[in-house]
Image 1 (tube, rainbow, N blue to C red):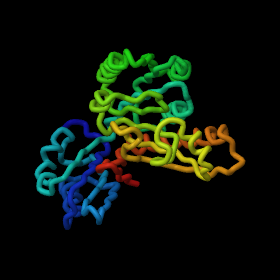
Image 2 (image 1 turned 90 degrees about the vertical axis):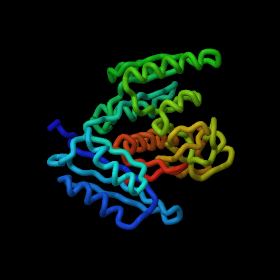
Image 3 (image 1 turned 30 degrees about the vertical axis):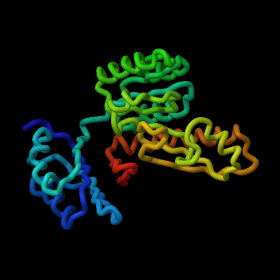
Image 4 (image 1 turned 120 degrees about the horizontal axis):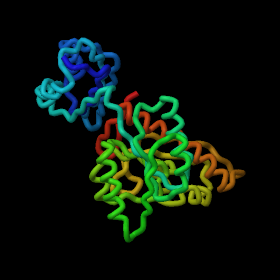
Length: 287
C-alpha cells in the first residue's frame, strides 16, 4: 500500500436532502477513517447543503489515488460538487506585489515561522522596489515591468513561470495592476486580493481618500477572490477599525494598512487550510 497522506479533507455542496451528514460520515467510517473534524451548514433560503469533513488516513482502506472513483457513486447520487485534498499536498503560492511592503512582510514573516501551510515558490513584481525584502527571505524575485503596450506579453511570461513552478494559488499583496481576463481564466477561484476598504463601499482606487472625504467613522479592509468585475469577487475575510474626526488622511492610511496585512493573512490561512467553499458570489467559511 502507498504511503498515505496524514489527513484528508472533503469539501462538498449539494441540494439539501435528509441524511446527508450520516451518509457521508458513514462512508468514511465504513472504510476505517477516523473523523477528526466536521462542520456543516444548510442555507435554508436556497435549500443548499455544505460540509467540510476531515479524517485521519491512518488505517483508511482507500488509497488517495483511488478515493475519487470510490466516492463518485455516492457523490453522483446526491448530485454533489466536491473535492478532496490531503495534508501532504501543500499549496504552491506566488505573491504579486508592487511598491507597498506591509502585506508582503506579514505573509513572509508568518511563513518563516511555519505558520502558513503553504510553500511560497516565488514573488513577482512590476517594480524592483521590494527585491531586497525577498532576498532577505531567500525567495526568488522576478521583475516584470508592465505597460499598456507590453501587458499581454508580460502576462504570458508570468503564466509560463507559474506553470513551471506548478503554482495553484496567487496572492495579490497590494499589486497595483488589474489582471486581464485571459490571466484570470487560468486560475479561477484561486487568486486572492486585498482591497483597502470594507467592500462594497469605496470600490476602486483611493478608498482612504474617499472615506476621509465622506467622514466615515469606521474604515475596513476586505480580502476576496478576484473576478473580472473589479472588487466584486466572493469575500473571504473582512475587518474594521474605528476612527474619529481627529484622524487625518495619513492616520486612516496607517490604521488601514494594519488591517490590510491581518485580513489578507487570515484569508490566505483559510484558503490554504481548505476552509473556504465558494458558492455563487458568496463564500462559506468553515470554522
